[in-house]
Image (cartoon, rainbow, N blue to C red; front, top):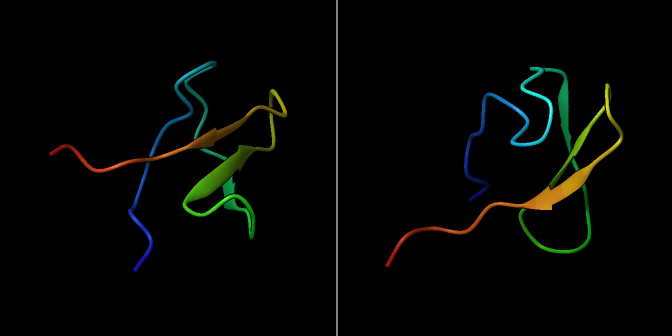
Length: 41
């Protein structure tokens, strides 16, 4: 299951797209940053 994220942590925009690799990665269409979302332990 993929974690839902609403905002890019770098630019704050909402145009996010899931990436295949690495696992749980998202790409921001506005600033082109890729980031991974991890769950808190």
